[in-house]
Image (cartoon, rainbow over all chains, first blue to last red; front, side, top):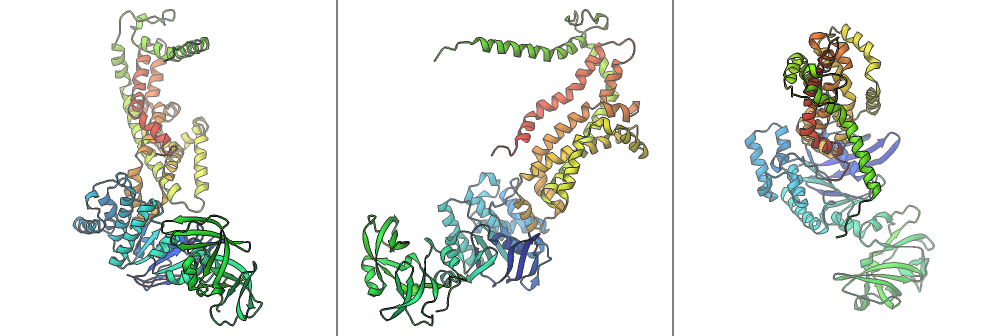
Length: 364
Length: 275
């Protein structure tokens, strides 16, 4: 059990800098997910915590120890790799017991710990099998078993579910979360999948181009994105973003978008008239049919449907409003013919406002 | 089913191929029939004739004469092969999984060794071995073969280990294994195809090598290739003996290819096809 702290941590390869001085404090027992597009540096950060990559600059602490110059094996961290990295010539028992053997534990102690972990992960019938004779999900569980037998201070996961098919991924995701609730070990989990991030994390760290864009609970990151990137990256379909400026229409202050759409502010704000802004509205903050009537007429707009698709119990609707196309995620099944005019309600209580220069969220 | 018509071009092709097979097999035929002839029966005009009586004694006589050389060759081949593939495996492990600043350069320089012909370094090698007090005996010849085998064995093992994912090594590192325990626990057990390929290659090369055998060893340490040449030298040669000796000398290599050949192909192809 341990905290993990990164202070101004840099990673450079020669003159090429990939991680630009990040600060991050992960609490004891916390499940933190590092999420970002490929090449953003999230795996590098994880590998630096593991000690597989050196830190070019800054301080890294695990527990109360500065680990900058400590060997990976002495950091007491366990890592699950994307390709599982199981030893192909060893059976499940030996795969799981390898670290204990290296630590010099007796045969009996190893047997006890491995069998206990195998029970937790329902691997007991497979202990004699080689990895090649296991299914993807079982291999995944062996990789986790290898990590938990050591009782490490920190679990590190590097995109562990990305090699599984969609159904198994969802199942393993839930098992992983349950395991964390049971074991309560500090966990750092890297993924590019924002659904995994939203469902697993106590806190999400959104990373892009080697810098942290936002650290927060899944709800915070979803409802109060700090940058345009976070608004677009977290949530699927992504947030609709429109350029515009603060204006007054009919006595109400709001954002007059470039396409002529006027979004009145839901509350008082100090933003001055004429200021250029980016407005963001989540697809699920848009409603149709009866639900429209929840909103005041000022929050209702006539739009032209471009395309609609039904995703199980929900529908995605692509529509055009004064020449700008946007996406709405509607509850219930709405099959609407392209070209139809429809009235939609926008929940402007959930409006995002960003500065177009810095792409940062404005305090309004 | 459509009846197959035989095209004239096909027939011509097979005739040519058959002729080439005959040309290729003629020396082997000549070796075998000469070995089975009585010395008195061997003469240039009748060299292609089949022996009147099969003289199997040639083999036992040749074996008796070549026995010391065969023993030398076995010691030489086994020791030099074992040491050169063991070192090559460690080299390959370092060059693939423990890259350091300049390791690519060192590897490239090491590979140059493959392109230096034996003859070029013969005199310096002779002088070096003499200075090391290793000239004339088997240990010196073993050392020469070990050093000369390192480039090819290092190359084969490096390429083989490149296919083992780095994450296996990283995982073992986190599991608490160090440089040698990763090698013994993870890399070595996965190396069997690499060892088969390199051991076939090295043992064949070393068993068949002649030039160093004759120049770097005294009579008592001569390998089989040199023993054979001496059997064929001199004034009145009983040609059945060197021919029988050649067959004896070829047997170990033939045996290795028959027994391990399929591993050889598999090892060479490992990784080239997804499997």
